[in-house]
Image (cartoon, rainbow, N blue to C red; front, top):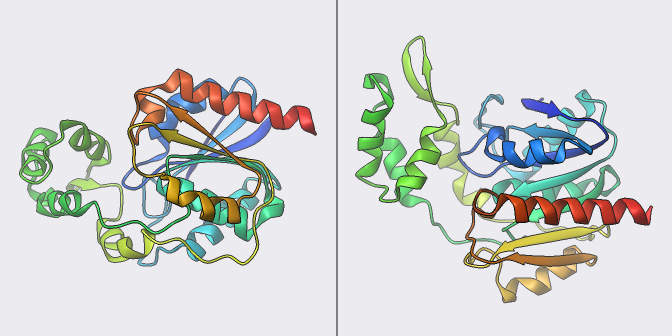
Length: 258
């Protein structure tokens, strides 16, 4: 399955993958910043944004979709930057097809299984009667009954769009709910990805913890880590300049090694 993508800039290709409930433009700022030196291809994950919907969503299928998409774009090798769920997909892609990935940047996620943490989000999304909506403020009021954080509501509302039949979510809510438990896991891989990897952690986030280090180093022996102070899980949005500098410096350091 070929995924929707948006390309900007020129140079060596850099693929950017967003997180759960998002879309490619969540990282539009970093894409613009890096497009002065790289061809940045921002991709909508399966069942997100403008990419096709299906009733299957697991790491095997998503990696296959990413292979199909890069081949359709005539990209043989690329660096990959992924945030959250996009970071898990980036890691799975590199582990399954190491020859396709020149470098890996993982934003605030580890190759481990996580506990459920989106119950309120699913409850809020399910409660929104999209077919009866007349405007976005109605959707936010319905979301607010389950989701207290205004920022989370605004993030989700970015994926609410007007159709000929009314409003609808761009993401495939039914499949995300059905496959959520699988997305929380991480596949088993017998071989490591030995290429260069940068993990970037938000200092106030608990998505990457000290106890994750053994698994990270087993799968990514050439991994290094950086921490951005004053940020949580949305580090690229909270400190975009610092985040972009870490990504740029890492990619340029790999280029000078070659």
